[in-house]
Image 1 (cartoon, rainbow over the protein chains, first blue to last red):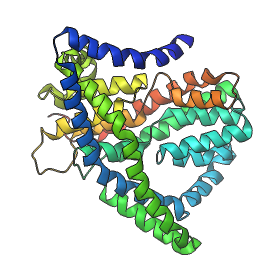
Image 2: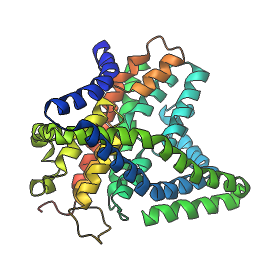
Image 3: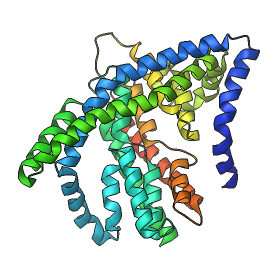
Length: 176
Length: 192
């Protein structure tokens, strides 16, 4: 585990140095290439912005109207008898919708109950088990100017659900 | 996307009507719109950095080598790319970045989406199979080390911050596998 942790620290600076060095050795005009790439990055952000505004507005509605906490309460009545800690239920709904929101919930659970408490560990596992689905779908489809995503959402949410179930089961076996 | 968007808006309006939350919605909606722009401004620098790096790696042949290396692994998941191999290198680079937990995963994924879009008729606005497969893999976001969660745990005084890494990786793998299974089952052009 230590080795993987070290990899996480060193791989970033290594890549930032190694890529230009390799290009330079191979005779690429590295500075000019970087600038051209960065320009592409700028256009990418610009093209994607309208899609992101649209989904952020819709998700804000969903959160502030109380629809989200309603859904959370419904899920709680189903999941609590199964032994799922009620504190962590809001995380299940927030995780696919908002990356920063989910991280805030995870931080709050760990602050209140301790990062090494069973509940804190479950929140950590679920937080890391998937990415922010709605954000990824919106960004990816938006950058290509795609308006109809077909089964992208269904497949992604099925993945999230399976990831949550797997995370919960591993947690039950290892930490409870 | 149309029905998802309308569903979220109309569903929220109905709930707001019954809960009396309509007043607080105004601020939150405006905040959401501003938040999208704020997030993108924050990400612009990171995107420019990685797209610049990608261009250097591309011109030095590095991206191509990566695609050649990962091609045999990815091609069964992206049958479409047997006839159209150009996006493969960006797809490979994006997935590798996500697995390593690098912030280059998203910009490279978006580049791959653009390359796939270029293979489609210009006025077509419906996603093709390999686009959805890439989205499914990156939305599941399998990562060998969940650095942001581990950093958060350490900051909050955990005695063993990285104890969650193993279970998280298992959950991520299951999420990826399940998403791909549903994707493959719902694909249209399986024989294309």
